[in-house]
Image (tube, rainbow, N blue to C red; front, side, top):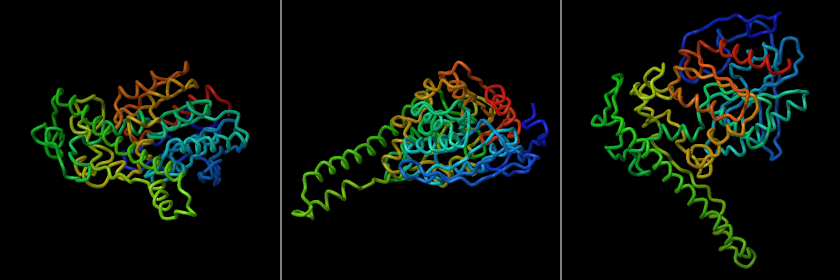
Length: 405
């Protein structure tokens, strides 16, 4: 079916691939062919955070089901899904969490408070059903919100990976020998070392299967070491808090001041080299339709591993543990999807450089829902450039058969 109300068909244009980052509307091929409503929305959460977004509404003005979408750090108020799903007959609230464009101190436990605030706002406005839509890192956020807070009447994942921390487990560079030295290296664990199968871009690389198993284990070991650094900082802060309670600031202001400084101190971790997945350069690893390289690279992953483009480069201790640690974060779909029992749809782009086919299938298989659907978009990249209208038609068709308009 076409992604629109019968009286307002969409132009079905498919464009070519676009550079990294263009997951926003408008691109000419993503624009609906009919006028849709837009309203700026500002919501204050119960804990005082400001959530801002845009409410997109259908041409006819009335609606019964709302779709809400966000990302831990991205502004989804102008996400390409918003106008396309609004044209299909739904109210769509795309919004940014309190950590927009800066996840240095991102706590997923706070992000889901923002999601609930957006959900409750759509209920207040008359929604009979609210569907949670998660794109990329928004998928694990929306699943966590549903599992822990019990909100949402459906879950839609688009190019959803297993969780930001789980993703970090596959891309972090395990060859870092000294966390304070961005150039320190354990050669045997370096995917960018010729002795391990690396060849300069754009030549493909070939990594030994046994070496790869050692590499993956070393990635988890580095994350565990970073977790210990973060946890120790938090332990020291809590110990200072206990000490602070026993100090009378009137009689010993200097001791009170020193203990208070240690209590409120927030450790910032500089995490070097976070773009080192051998599958970027060796397409025989978990083969699919992806091209060589990463959407975070320019274009060589080596450059982004050492330079700009890597993820989680500066994090607070608590932000690292909550968001980017695959060992400590609670935003892992392996943990949350069994608790997601509402109707579930996952749309996976088969040319995604970041998410493997087996990971997408595991997400759906882990769902606790009886009603679950998995669709592959052949040849589509992570941000679905050139396939967005097709993807939204799939989502709209799925919505139409389950929720009122």
